Length: 18
Image (cartoon, rainbow, N blue to C red; front, side):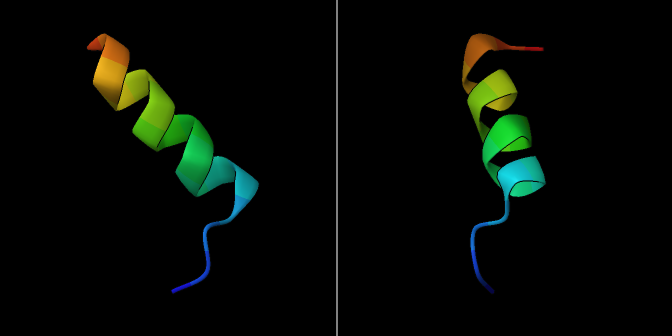
């Protein structure tokens, strides 16, 4: 699965705990 902008956004927020 290619890393789409949305996927990257969710992954980044997951790291911050959002």
